Length: 256
Image 1 (cartoon, one colour):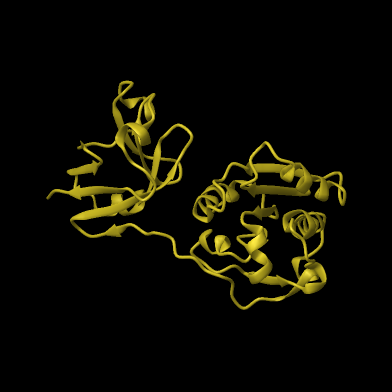
Image 2 (tube, one colour):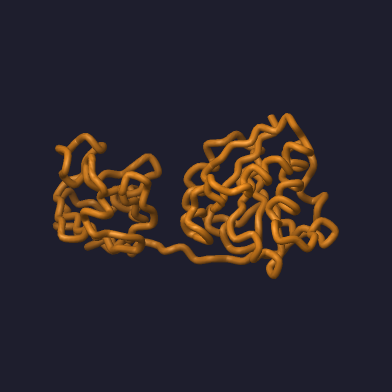
């Protein structure tokens, strides 16, 4: 299956997204193109990385992922293709791809000048054609040479001790629910059986199993399908009502 996903900050009101898709379909009309999201906040690398990291493993191995976030900045740092966990990622060398997994990619390629033209729309003119050709059977090696290392960003990590886990909000979904970087594996390892969750002006002494475990208007907290602590208000905008935002602090205090 020739499968390409797209992650971008283009939104739905401009010609950018259909132009990128048209560039790929002109090469292979049989491509299956899937949108991960095109509503990433403009130039928000952290949000883009979270969305891609949370979804790419659900696609079949061999899927090509086109990352079109701040692609014009790639004119300085170059454009790259990497192979990670049997998936192919194509995008600008701006650090997003360093946030997808803890391990280094198995293959890293910097696209050669032959394939990198001067353009104000590199996602359409540079990245989309390469993505379409790779999805159709070409190798990323066909478009450049080995890259020893790519630009790296450091993701915010939770701070874990025997007494406390201190985490931060790393994503706010369209419902106003807040996803943190507090991992279930850390909680399960340290939990003595009694604990308190603290965020905003709220305190909870128990975790829930889902959104509907509390009455509408009440706070919930549970470990979601990503294994991350999620908090919010049932049938309400948790971010707005709790006064929380990106990077807001969330605590789990353990009690012996």
